[in-house]
Amino acid sequence: MTNKELANLIYPDINKDISYYENKYPLRKLKEGAIVSRFAPSPTGFVHMGSLLTTFIAQKIPKDTDGIFYIRIEDTDQKRSLENGIQGIIDDLKSFDISYDEGVISETESKGEYGPYIQSKRKEIYQTFVKYLIEKDLAYPCFCSEETLDNMRKQQEKQKDRLGYYGKWAICRSLSKEECAKRIINGDNYIIRLKSPGNFNKKIVVHDLVRGSIEFPENDLDVVLIKNDGLPIYHLAHIVDDYLMRTTHILRAEEWLSSTPIHLQLWQTFDFKPPKYAHLGLVMKIEDSGIRRKLSKRKDPEAAVSYYHEKGYPIYAIKQYLLTLANSNFEGWMDDNPDKLIEEFKIDFKKISKSGSLFDLEKIINISKNYISKLSALEVYNSLLTWALKFNSNYADLLIKYKDYSIAILNIEREGKKPRKDFACYSEIMDQIFYMYDELFLAEKYEWQAITNKNEIKNILDIYLIKYYDENDDKETWFKKIKDLCDELGYASNMKDYKLNPDKYKGNITDITTVIRVALTTKSMTPDLYEIMQLLKKDCIENRVSLAIKKSNY
Ligand code: GLU
Image (cartoon, rainbow, N blue to C red; front, side):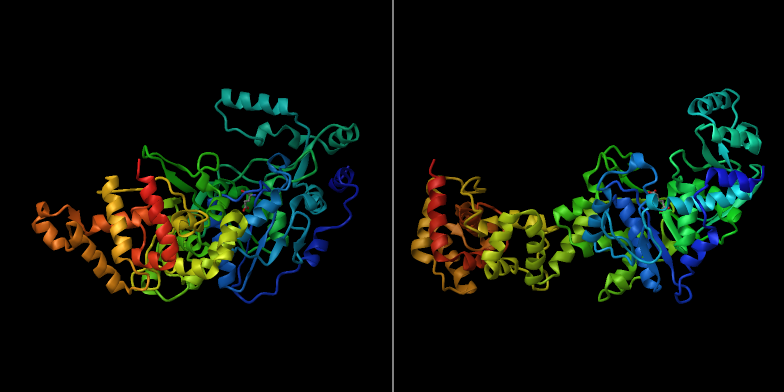
């Protein structure tokens, strides 16, 4: 029996050959140096921050070189695949503005000429490539049961031998074709393995764009290519897909680094030119105990990309953060180019950390605060509304109903030289400025500070309203009147005087403004009180003062 006959027996329905697909998916017509890369997730319905970082780099580099970035779904391991798991990934990418030229765009649709972009729809293609290997005697059927493999593992452990299916352990490698044919016709279960040409005592060098050149022993494992269900495992799917989709750069997690000798061997076995590899380190987290560990989707809510979307972190700020993780020189570049957009920064593989990056939520918060502080009130309003329309319809209704008023609130202490940096994400904003809306204002939990005596609070507020408050006052007059109120009530209107002679006074001007502030907002810390009062207006101020007096009247 010839190899060809065996290959035909295994795949009687596969009638095309590799060249058919090579013609169908021709070399891409891109300019010299253009990079083609991809994101190849399993359909778990969720993107991890570590994957977002890899994806972000994988999409930015083609953009910088007029290349192509595409999304391929790797669902050949049906156990890891979730129903509707593709949509979650697409939504996560969309929420971070990660755009792609080709690939899946929904559970059922895709765009681009190099598809299908879902591996389970490419069965025939993989089988064509494996049929070719069987014909060339570079792959063979293996009938070993789980039990046989288990026993083999135990024996290898006992003999302190290397684990795996290789050399003398690769029992099915030496089966005659006739024996194989007999068992196949008999209906025995089998998988297809690579007939590895490698020698473990020889070395192979992996050239990695991040890590440089690393020496490994050659692969001599007869790895599985096609499983019993007819679908490939990662090693084969990676080579076939990235060859036919004409990928030039593979950016993937470092967990794949140790398999790269297998992949290089497969490229060579098919006589295809391998792409360039870049293995990115893990995104780590330091626990309070000081232990460094992988940012985990089980333990850390902030590991999921959707967390940032739901909280309403600005996409631009997250991208900026990802760039600080991607390249150590990014922050220096930002300092040197304060007016440039981050999109103009070019990622350098050599400056990607080999040891992985440390995830720092505090830093995301700071970058976001800084970013939001530089936006105009209208920009904040628009982003806040977009967030609220998705996640809080109550807030959205208020923002729409009181559009100009809301913009004015968001403008308090904003467009000056030193804008306030109090919002890190859009979900926080309404919770911080709730008191500006009667619908959200709650006359509870007043944060009284130095002055807590109810009679004193009533006295201050009554006199202020009756004698001093005038909604038409400009800021200077308003402040002068508060000073007058202090003088009248025996509080220092000048902090210098107060510090020199504290015993002379009941307290100072801050104590008085705090009483007014807390009465109007319930909070002891707010942005500029004058501006708040300008927006709340007379009726509301009078109502809130009487409410506060009532509530302090226990
Ligand atoms: N499906 C693989 C994973 O999720 C992709 C690795 C690759 O990018 O090639 O790890």
